[in-house]
Image 1 (tube, rainbow, N blue to C red):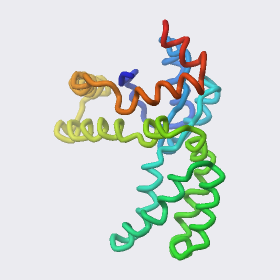
Image 2 (cartoon, rainbow, N blue to C red):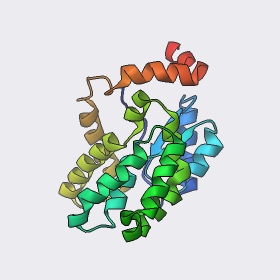
Image 3 (cartoon, helix red, strand yellow):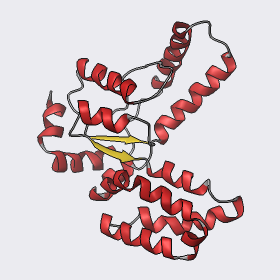
Length: 213
């Protein structure tokens, strides 16, 4: 399993039209299929994925959902709130997770933070695909932290530079930064071996055919 950055796009606004352009570009350049897309609720992405790669499973980043939930609480409550949420996303199945969410809503923390319950329910359709996967795959798709780490490094570089005279100048700097970042990617993705076997079972030809090419 290897990590890679497949493109760099600069746009003034984010939405379905932008993501449609991104996915069509990837498809034109040879991306035949996307098994799972893990996102943090990016606007317009579900619609664009459905149009270009309709077989893709769209999964909400669980870590982002947890962080967003904790944002509703003051620091003194966050540790306890995190513990109360944990049974939801560690449940063995979607049905068990739904029961845990219902229990959380009826419990003291759900009563104290109804906005947290509402946030999980709004995202639920994009949360439950997670529970269909075995543990090895869950560990791979649990979070978008790998991308967040890249974004943090890019933000630092951009902030240091400050002003850019044009989009082209910004693109060149970001491209050079990404090249330096990916140069450090010598190891296989964490937990990939165990996940790979599960992908082969769950996705069959969609996974194995492209691995052999």
